[in-house]
Length: 157
Image 1 (cartoon, rainbow, N blue to C red):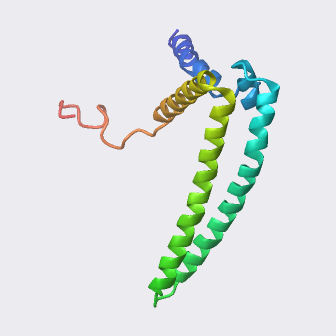
Image 2 (tube, rainbow, N blue to C red):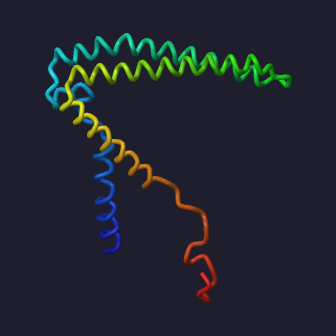
Image 3 (cartoon, rainbow, N blue to C red):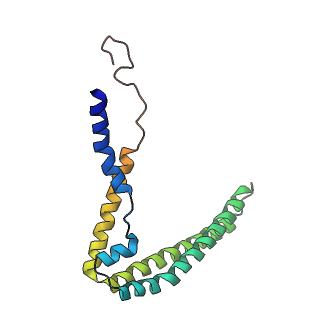
């Protein structure tokens, strides 16, 4: 009987988690269509995103190169601080390019889909973020320390 109750309780807690983790069959484009975004608007979004995605990929590669150079410069015992500063500035420039491309994509998408759809997308994004955070909280390991039954039977624990 205890097994049956444990299994039922386990199913009650696990099934919603599994359902929340499975991606929807529609994907991002399906979500946009579900919110009423037309095929023409989706094409406009893709036309804006494609070159910006390429810029971001290129900037990320360059950023990795600069970080490797920085790591190499810091490996030496006699650090050349002016070189380190230059590399840090270069890294920041690439980081800015990545962020600016992301900002441009979001602003242009907002213009294309309109404020109502944009607000719905923001709401969905926030809900997904909260689900991910809640799932992470449930998967955290227990903190080490004494358990109630770890100590002597004299009631100390």
